[in-house]
Image (tube, rainbow, N blue to C red; front, side, top):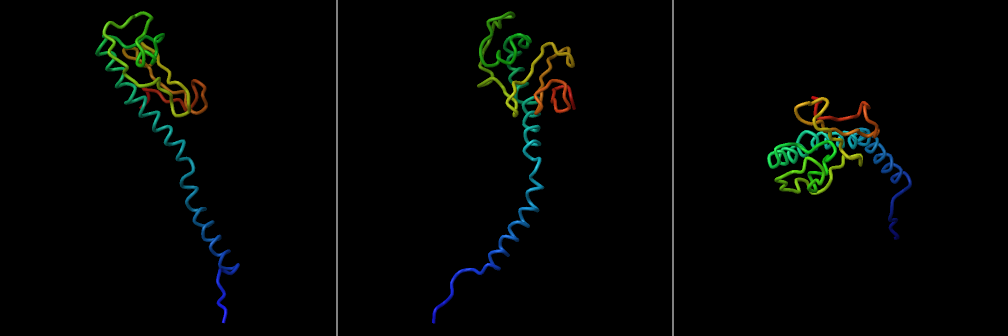
Length: 139
């Protein structure tokens, strides 16, 4: 007697239906998570990571980098005024870029934080002033 080995078409279709049902339940829950994680990463950079480097720069040199020097002053010693007298960097390994591939914006003294600096990302749409901008003045 010969044994039949393998799956029938009905068994294979049943497995495909089960997998499709599971995917239909899981995929909608994961949709949008990538954008949410990018926003969270940008907030962490703006509220914690870059400000730490700026605070170290300010402790060493007495002032924050100027707007013209920008965040590049955290990677390489600036050559433009005000020349830091005690630059002890690099304070960051590389120029900070937001999760969407845009450079973070830096203004010192800030418009929103006149005693400090404004640090922000222009977000996914890459246009300043959009609803997706993330700044250190927002709560």
